[in-house]
Image (cartoon, rainbow, N blue to C red; front, side, top):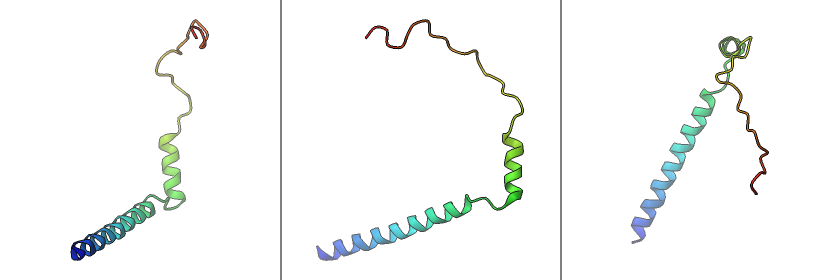
Length: 67
């Protein structure tokens, strides 16, 4: 009984270490490399003029009506 518990604890500790190292490496991979990468994202994401996809929604009554 004690051997199974020690085995479970060691497996869980190994899993925690592996998951934490994977999490830290993914955080490091998502950081900006430098100004070159920043300028590329600004060019692709920025739009000079806003183009609406649909007309605005107008509700003809107050929000608290019916309470």
